[in-house]
Image: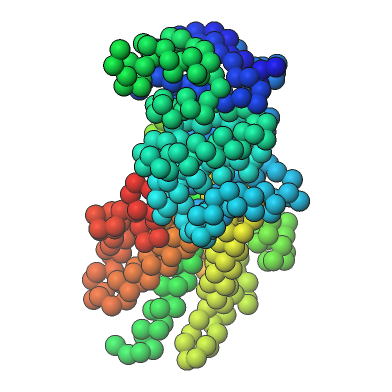
Length: 237
Length: 298
């Protein structure tokens, strides 16, 4: 069963077509990676799923339910968590308050357990618990963004370039965590420019090029694919 | 110049500062979320004061009930205008919102003129509030004491609310980053409506207190206090609730000390001084006293 099915999706920004009929699916419980250069439409696709941009054509189905016309907060309540590009901090809110917004829709009785679990996953956040999110380092902000999404206990997690601007060792830690939490049965769609790292953890991969799908396949096959290798992995053919 | 005179001016500054603060907080909250500079906000204060005159004459005899009724009326009026004037423009360029607020201001003023009067009206004062009290050798009017207490209590209550309650933190989150707040499952319409309600309610409170302090109200009385409250909000750091209160008091004190300590020939420049202060703040510390530094809003 697919967690997410996107069919012939088109999104335009004032006459410019950012997505020109993209179809893809995210299998339940798998990590799917979306690769592509800057401007390929990767972030736009995630925004369309979470409702931040409205598609001009096509359908987006979450567990068979069409969500293309829903508002972002309604889609969020269906179990979708989106970590946007640039991490989407509330910089003037403390780490604690940011996490509290992550559990905004959670039942009150579960809140403290969920926060505790997130703090165990990222002990650094415990040290910074009362600090303003804006004062955190880039890596800590990414951890907070991820923790804030995870405390919502999403069924589908959307991640937009989690490794952007991070030191390699921290990127690896972030991806290790993604791998780890996905074992709870969560479906993940991750957008990345760091193809090598992403393909290591992903099950399936799509490659997007200027608003259209270029290729897709099992992550292990895509990493061997010559043209992808040349374009995104820096491999000389 | 003696110590008593200084303290008397201090009291005057705190009194007028309390009024600016009560008006500024609504401006600041709404700006923080919608980036709307609400030019109709001062007029809401005026509508509150003017309807206070009519309600007082025909319906309500108890000043306490009057006060509550007017505040709620102003709050509801704020909700109504949010719903019919600003919500349809959600996502539109900020300048559209700004122009709409001019229209709302105009509707409120002409509406008041048609429904009530174009003339200044005497605002019935209450003996307890018009009396002068002797506090540590200073003569303080009851209305000023009440205004100060109400403003400080409002500041504490609002700050507490936005720091500790789920809805209050969500309000701050929406004002920090609207899009991301929606990704958290927050329906932004609710914090936005709440900001309009609380802000308008406090403007209504200020309107009644204004009437009790000066004893006279008219349909254009909202314009200048509205602008000055905007200056206060900018001084304190627009978007910040504690900032609006700090800005209100800074402006009130600066204004009173300006006319109190310069030769009388300067007192005509009172408003010039206020807006000159705005220029200086915008040049020296554009984010205001408690405002976020540039670039925080990524």
